[in-house]
Length: 148
Image 1 (cartoon, one colour):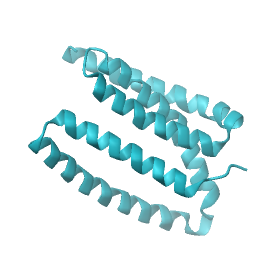
Image 2: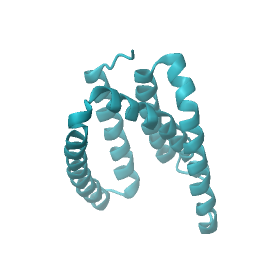
Image 3: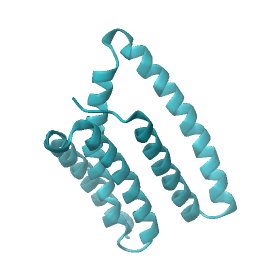
Image 4: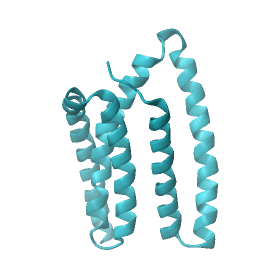
């Protein structure tokens, strides 16, 4: 893919993300907010894996499905968080979650970087996306959020 076209793909990704956010409410009304969050998050991670496995000229095009899925699941997850955490402790809880997320990301970045050094960036990305898919799936199986 030519370097100049990366800006176009990035812009298309933002456009698809906003389109997904627009669709999120309609999808949540049809299948429920919990399922929208679950399916969107799993679809996002799954499309990341497919884009790495594709490893061809089609990779940037396949990669565009991930921002669409992210646009669908992000508003649903934010709504669930707003509904589940009381107002008086929301700021503190989200701050702690943000710190924990940053620490996990730091550890994962070091691990994935090391994995890329000893194998290749291809295998490191595949491992990172696969682990993310498994962790997100386990979190949602454990939570079993029931929409109202």
